[in-house]
Image (cartoon, rainbow, N blue to C red; front, side):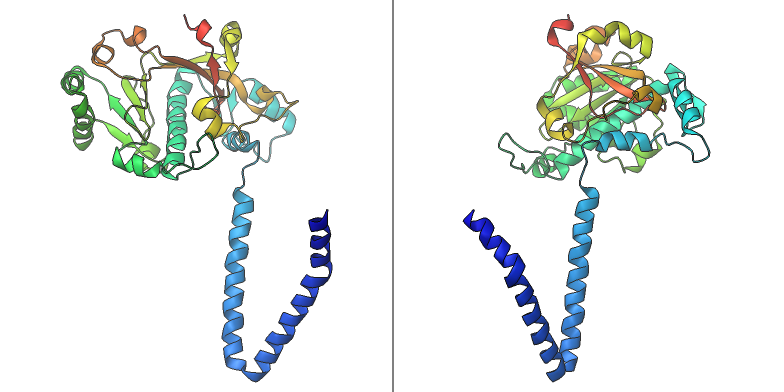
Length: 331
């Protein structure tokens, strides 16, 4: 209570008096030394402009609880010459306004795979920017591990028998596996994405069907491996309704750190009317990679570590937070 009283007195009397005193002193200085005062005022003005700009930037970039939802809305915006009624009706029917067409599930698959990769790159950027926190809420120095282990990136490896044999030989010696991938990248046989701004990621339409994605974080032991032939399936609303009881929204692990505060969906809205939830991306992935998994002719049995389902919009963009299957439902 005492400090509250002190604060009120300071704001009411002390700060105004101090401001008046500063103005008087600056005026006197300007009259006595006009040229130095001019440069001092210009310097102070620049400092204030920079400080004000930084504050405005901080306010602008402060993420709201609906940050990712708003981002998703901007990816399929309402045209200015279309009524809200028509906009919502076509959204419910699966129309993508951005691309002016209805997509088939097969077409959405390629777009969803690129969007899913973009989500991985968003996670990686948090590591590069030292924005990952521990249980105490302290930021961790993750950028140095990204650089040390050549990590915090996504590898896309198109598959054929020659590449499988080459990588099999390298996987058998774990220390040479990443070196083997680097050789493929050097010869344009594979790709490495670090940021969503990378030109090779921007230009890749993900139309290839037979490839493996490896999401590598700051430690070589932390991997997510996706075989495109078996990992990911686009579901329509009816197909999702048959399995949705086996899945729950889960706030745990890295997802809680990266996406929990900014990934709320506004309540009391029909998401289908906004072009979301007509389609879903069901994803199965492994958290490691081994020789049997990599060279298996049928990888559907080996890549079964975790399952997630992502909301899609009608243009194939992934909503940032997944719906995760409970372990008891994965058998």
